[in-house]
Amino acid sequence: MSTNVSAGAGSSFGAGLPGAPVNLKGRSRPGESVIKAVLFVSAMLSVVITFGIIAALIQPVIEFFADIAPSEFFSFDESSPFSVGPLIAATMMSTAIALLVAVPLGLGAAMYLSEYASARARKVLKPTVELLAGVPSVVYGFFAVMFVTPTLLKGFLALEISFLNVLSAGLVLGVMIIPTIASLAEDALTAVPQALRQGSLAMGANRMQTTLRVVLPAALSGVAAAIVLGLSRAIGETMIVTIAAGSMKNLSWDPREGMQTMTGFMASTAGGENPVGSTSYNNLFAVGLTLFVITLVINIISIALVRRFRQAY
Image 1 (cartoon, helix red, strand yellow):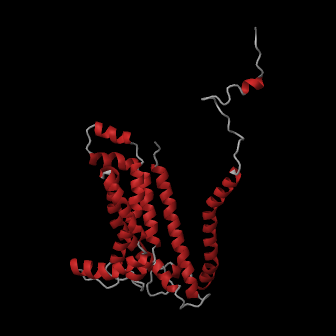
Image 2: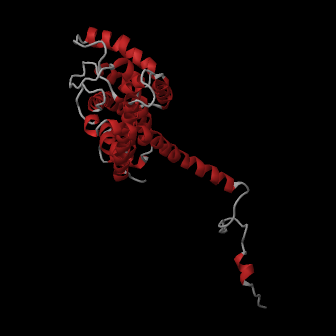
Image 3: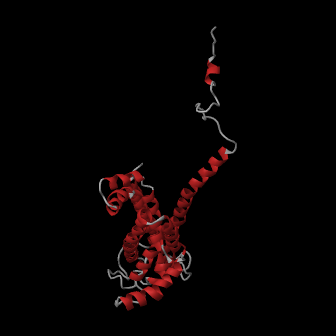
C-alpha cells in the first residue's frame, strides 16, 4: 500500500516537533516595527546632534574669519587676542600630563582587577575606582588649587611653581580619567578567552608574562579605545583647567607656569563680557570649531587603530 504526500504537506511535516527547522523569515511580532523605528531614531539622534553642533558653529565662524585673517588666528603669537596656537599648546600639554598619570595607573588597575584580584576584592575595588568618575570636575579643580599645588608640588616636592599652573591641572586631569581607562580596559581584558591564559600557563609562562604578552595584546583594541576615550575626556574638560591652569595666553614649554587652554578660553569668553556678534565673541566659536575638529581627528585615528588591531574570538 503506497502513500503519497504532497509537496505542501511535506513542507510542513514535522513543524512544531523538537529540533525541527523553523522558518522565521517574514514572521514578525506585534510592535516589532515600532521597536525598530525607535532604535533607528536613537541611532540617528547622535548624527543629527553632531550636524546640529556644526551648523551652530559655522555662521559665527564665517563672520569671524571675515574680520580676522586665518593666518592670525592659527598663529602662535601670544600677544594676539585672537591667536589659537598658545591655546592648542596648553591643551596638548595638560592632556599629555594627564595621560602620563592615567594610562599607567588605569591599565595597572585594570590588569589587577582582571587577572589578580579575587572576586571579593574586585567587588569592592571596582566600584571604588569608578566613584572617581562621579566627583564633579569643579571639585577636582579646587583640589588642584588648594592641595596639589601648595601641598604636593610646593611643599612635598619643593618645586618653584606659580599658583596657577598646567602641571597641577594635568595631574588632576589624569586622576579624573583613571576610572574611564580602568573600567573600559578591565572589561576588554576580562573578555579575552580563558583558553589563551591556560595555553600560556601550560607553556611555562608565569602570570605576569601571561598578562603582558598574551592577555594585553589580545585586548589591545579595547585598551586602545579606553585610552582614546580618556584622551577625548581630558581634551574637552573645562572646569579643572579653568580653575587650576590659568587664564592668560602663555606659549611655554614649562608646565610649572600658568597657561590658558582652549576650553578655559571658551569658558572665560562666554562669561558675558563680550557683546554678542562682536569679533571677540565670534572668536569663541572659532576656537570651539577648532577643538571639535581636533577631537574628530583623534576619534577617526582611534577608530582606524581599533579596527587594525581588533581580534575576534
